[in-house]
Length: 262
Ligand code: NAD
Image (cartoon, rainbow, N blue to C red; front, side, top):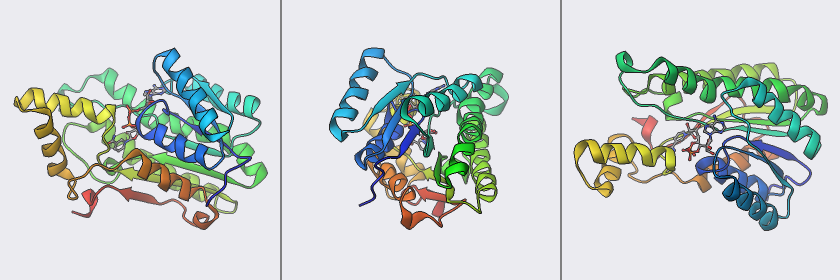
């Protein structure tokens, strides 16, 4: 069992989906948590308190908008001042927009790049000095199967996720002589609000029941025919934080039901 007692983890976009699954896995191993993400304030406060109670860790929350570099920097500063340090950064917050390139709104391009790519640059830049000082750190970038292969109509997302895989390699080389590791996790379809939106759109467009839209979405890309779960991604992130994973560096780890094996 990996113990993260005494360590502090910042997980961006942890009010929902995969980020919440990762926060639960790291908190379950004893890490203090800085949560982040959007949502209804009372629901977020309930979630924060429940995590702190369930795992007997300190759980704080900061509502930084990952599209805004100054707020991203403040998130790391606040985690450091309130929780004492930042040992683990999980860059998870992400958004999607689906449209053909010639119709893709400029504003959506900027937003997807800001949240899915630039935010990770700003968190890593802000957290690295203290990680280097202590000689230990874990940076986990939640990329995607779309960090390795493309799909039509997702130009901003695919570009951002490929960029994030590249950023992972640079951070790895710049920390190679230390106990800091940086890796990307590349999930296939995970049934979260981000994907539910795409299922709903498919059901509407094709005039099919939701269950059929779900089946088609999986059948098109994911040979296992099953969704990856946030718990499975949380378990992989926890493994990357363990001593056993100290030499896994600069990897883009697929957890995708066979999507990118095709
Ligand atoms: P989700 O919509 O359930 O959760 C996204 C989280 O990010 C939420 O907490 C949301 O509040 C937060 N967020 C969004 N914009 C933000 C902003 N500007 N500032 C701060 N927080 C913000 O989505 P998810 O499916 O859990 O996605 C999490 C990550 O996993 C994303 O990076 C996504 O690209 C990636 N991913 C998801 C899938 C999938 O199938 N669901 C597959 C591969 C990769």
